[in-house]
Structure formats: structure tokens, C-alpha cells
Length: 475
Image (cartoon, rainbow, N blue to C red):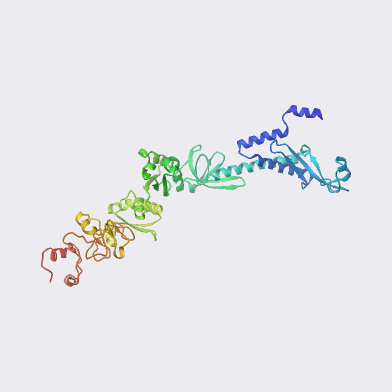
């Protein structure tokens, strides 16, 4: 026996030393904890005992996690007459081992694992390998679960039908046809940026779903490219996207000295162009965020110019008037510009041209002569730019009504105190009129004295020529 032990030592390291070396390697390469592998080995030994002895209810494994030295024992009960040699031991035999044993005591009998049969050993090996695979999958799942909703770089492997398999290092991800940009094609070994949508644990390992069309992909790319966004100085407040075609993004800076749009665009467009290249030429509109819904909608419709915006924050609807020549630009090709603006702002936007608004009675004339300083002094000196009486008490400031349906309108005093918007009377009687001379030029006079004389008049010229321009009064 002594020679055998010496020969064993000379032939190489012990089983426990080899096991310790293997566990250390697994721990480093696959990030699998030693404790979990030792647990798997313990279960494999119990399984081997069950296959060898037919049962394993009384099997105990004693394992040292530091040295990986282990022992397997069968716990047998001391009885007078042995009926089950696996579970019981006779009193006489127990006394031979130690005179202290009495009936019903538990005797530990060590099992030599090298005595296990081939089948039992193979099953134990399979249990250990299965445990290693499970732990490896769990590590990969935890790793990518932590990267969920983030952008990673992968290498295209192959097409699986219309889907693409992308290698992310320790795991493969699936880019489905639905999550691909329309018209995009990949070549094997091509590097590509993808957004991790979801990570699911399956029996075959983690299933990772990625996307190239998700709006958050653009946001994460800006976080990578723009230091101000990454550091939180510039915030991306809202984003809407039609993948492969166009993206609109509203940004805001907490630092008044930092231009949010300029930071995202970069010098000579370097930052935004880098992201456009990743997205294969997709256009990106970057606008300033504004808490004022009307101004935000105006910015969102860029590059179209806007005459006026009437926004209802409660109903989440907005009426927008644009110059006739800007209507197609505001709506965009196949309605894309308006659609993206609506998603960006959360408002349902109704866009009309100036002509359409005039015909519908919604137009507010902005080309009046009330910008003159004399009129500004006359009509605003007592109010400091703010009308504080009547049903519009919440809103005329510096000529602009800031709330409700009269945004960007201008108030004028006098006989018509219920609502002039840049020369237009909004309640209907004096719509589209223009104040030029002596308070009455080109307006319709509705007093009873003249109603009979001009019952059908709809033209301001009748009054300018016959009544207020020095002609004799109508008869």
C-alpha cells in the first residue's frame, strides 16, 4: 500500500489538486463560481451512489471548498439483524469498528468513488458537465440582462431565413426582419450596432432579441457620441422615428450656457453625421424642447415656417396655420413631417394653409399696422402689456394671448374690446378687417343707424368711400 501511494504521488497531482485547478480555470475563463461547481460535484456523487447502490437516502458528501478534498459516506443504522445492508449495519460489526456503538446509533462508512461502475461514473460526469453548462448560461444571461435597453456592437454571422444571427461575444443574438431597417442588407463578418430589446432564459441558453429600428437606438447612440448627453448636461426629452427615413429629437440643456442643439450637432455636424453613418444615411432633425406646447409644436414642424399655433393642452390637440407655400413642407412627404411632429409632441396636429384658414374663418391677420410705437403707447401704457379685465383676464401679454385659443393674438382697445387678433375680430363681426385711418377704414359698421342703408354690404370699401372718407352720409 505504501508503494502504491508513493507511485500515485510520483505519477502526478492528486484528484483533489486536479479538481482545484480545473475549478480555478472555470472561475477565470467562464466566470463560474467555485461554489456552484462544487455543488454540482456533490450532486454528481450522490447520483453515482444511487446508481451504484440503488438508493442514496443515506449518502453524505463532505467537501472542503478550499482544497476541493472530498469524502463520500453512507450513514448506516446499528441493528440486531440486518435486512438492508445499504441502510443498516449489525451491532457486532459496529462494535468491531468502535466499541462505543450501541443499537440505533449511526455509523459512517466511507465509500470509495473509484469503486463505482462505469455507468455510475459516466452519469456523475454528465451531472457535472450539465451543471457547468447551466452556470455558464446563467452567467451569460445575467451579463446581457444587465445590458438590456442598451446598444452593443455585434458581428454578423449568417442569415437564418429573413432573420440575421449576430454574435455578441459570448452569445448570439437574433435580429428579426421586423426589427431591421427597410432595405438594409448585411454581409458576414460585418460589424453592426444593435439595441438589445429583450433577454429571455431558455433551456438552450439565453435568447437575445435586438433591434435596428427602435427609437431608443438613436438616443443611446447620442449618449455614446455626445459627452454633454452622456454627462446629463443635455437631455433628450422626446424622440420620434421612422427607421431608415427620418428621426426627430427634442433636446434641452440644464446649463443656460450650453446650446443643446449645437452640442448634439457638433462642429460642422461631426457628431450627428457619425450617427447618421451608423444608421445608413437616416436624416435626423434636432430641435429645442420647450415647455410651451405651442412653441414646441412650432419647433417640431421644422424646417417649415409657421404663422400661428393654437394648442389645447387638455385635449392634446393643436391647430397650425402655415404660409401657402410652406404647406407641403410642413406636412412632408406622405405626411411624414407632421406625423413625426405629432409623435414627438404628443399632440394631434391639424395643419392649414393661410388660404384654407381664411376660408374656414380661422385665420388671424398678422400684417396690421399696430406695430407702430404710437399705438403701442396708446393701447398698452395703462396695462404694461397685459389685459386684466373681462373674460380674457388670463392672457394678453405684450400683444400675445398666452393661453387658450388665442395664442399669438394682439389686443386693441376701443369699441371692440371682445377680441382683436392682429387686426382680426375673432368673434366674427369684424373678421379680416384692417384698422388704418380714423378708426374705421375698411371695417364694417354695424350700428343701427346704418343697418338699413347697407343691409347687404360685406365690403369695407363701401364705408371707406361713402361714409368716412369725406363723402355725404348714405340716405
